[in-house]
Length: 359
Image 1 (cartoon, one colour):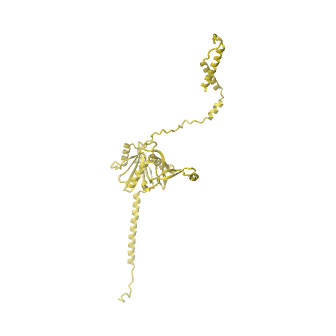
Image 2 (spheres, one colour; image 1 turned 120 degrees about the horizontal axis):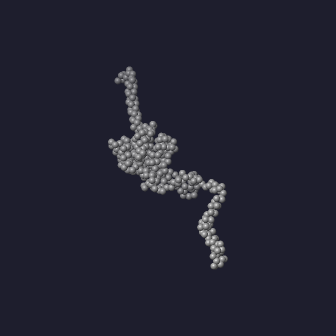
Image 3 (tube, one colour; image 1 turned 90 degrees about the horizontal axis):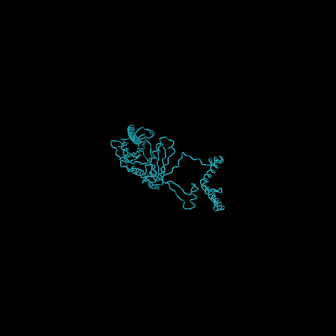
């Protein structure tokens, strides 16, 4: 605006000088009449001086009002703009021990399908080194910072190890897995895109109970697919739910289904029920299983015990109690047989005096 004003004043000054030169004689020098040619630098200096004077004469209250009308600028808050790069390079090592049954092997394959950021490894036979040392060495070679290890005992008990194995080396959690149902076994109608990123939902207990808050962070690291992973798809079409009930963690996997109404009547009913013309529902995909936390360690597969479940009962003790009950039933049956024999021996039939008359 300032430059436009300067140009207008320059053009007006040129017109006035041209008129003066026309009115004067041709042989007369304009400098003798007291006229001097227009100096552009003087005009610019005058304009700048006028602008400064106008700024100085302005009312200070108007400037204060303008400052008040401006929106407050928060310098501490910076706008988070995603550049789409692969920065959160989480890699999870998924493996199992030798001796796993078919059901546990299928469960592990289902988990690998849900985790595009996993690293597959063959069955582990630790030998004399131990499970923790062997898995940590494998994670270091494969560049993994989290691990999901399925351990099978006596070909019937499944234990799930989950933890961090990076430079921090810990923490780690050991769960007992029960109520396992794989995708092929359930034959559910849910289906999602392979490699899609999940929404992780947690029960309110994961914010109220201390050890569950730690378990929640491990679930996010293991099951949360990093944004921009090469094997992942930029879609969110499924939900993984973790619920705490009966002092156990129940894991479910659902597909997000958005159904559009085919006619106006269905759209009216859907809007009346849910408030939206497009209905959204969840369809279970699988797998489903229950995790019973046993112990939380400070380190990777060992170290200081941070939490120990006092309500956990080992499956060996449960089977031993069942055998005791069976043994007790055998003992009771034998006692009943002895009592019956004693009762039969005590019963004496008196002799009939007429028994030999009709012989």
